[in-house]
Length: 421
Image (spheres, helix red, strand yellow):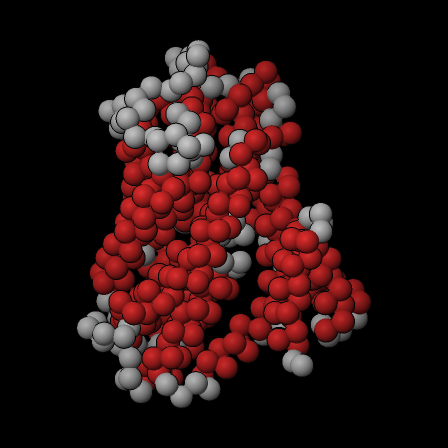
């Protein structure tokens, strides 16, 4: 058995063991990364450990802890309640429109160049606050934020759009930036409709439409005061820094949180306890093991298996599936840069449309960001209220893996098989 295949089987075993036994999935994944890495990686023991540690997503750890720390302070001092009130006014009091407000706001932020996780980090806590205050199901609200980020990211100046179009150009393939953007936007809008039809009206058996006011006995005080003004200024600085100066969202969130703690110690009290440590361990653990798989050449192995497929249409579908499966656990950005070149042998034969396959691959690799193991999905889980975090995790897990199973064939059937692009 090859190392690449063995690493895939170990990943399956990790999920199986964590499902059958009360073992934390993240801790199990980190343990598996160490054990497998020590057996198969080359070099001395110290070199092997360095390689394993190098796969730990330090940037993801900083984003998850920094953002949840900052918004814990914002929840404590009532800033999130104020932002929820503003969103409610923008929707003219119609609760049923709020998920779409979250969708299009997030899409607009990513369409002008913000990274998807950065936009989700900014909007997901507000969506969680809306869900909590107006008794919305937090799963569809979070999914609308994630899908909005995916929808906007493929604009000609969006992060995913820039990367995809650059890879297409470097490989001398036919491309269409506007087709890529429009197809992803429409696909995510349709997904949004499906999400709200299937999930949006379910909240402990109560319909959401028509609920015009929160059912809290005592609505929160949403008047601006000094701590809230300072928090809003900090969030604005965080947004401007991410959008226009390329500052890291996680580190910037820590800086803002520390400054707010100094200005308003009462509002920061207990905020570190609200950091989603369990979720952070879970996601970082899985990503660490997947990074080891990538270092072992598992993605390249899968690509070589696809290249051996004789039928171009079948190979195109397999490439879309690989994009969906791997991206559910790893970087969508990295997958787009890796898998498009794998499609070159099919595209050179002109058996399938380059624009169609690239767009289908982009959709397959991005809509699975709703997985709780992706950065965007984990941010939604981390910002869910403590009592609902498990519910949100399981909801994103079901939806994310349904996207892994269904998005590739649907995108393939629409964009590749007819050959109309």
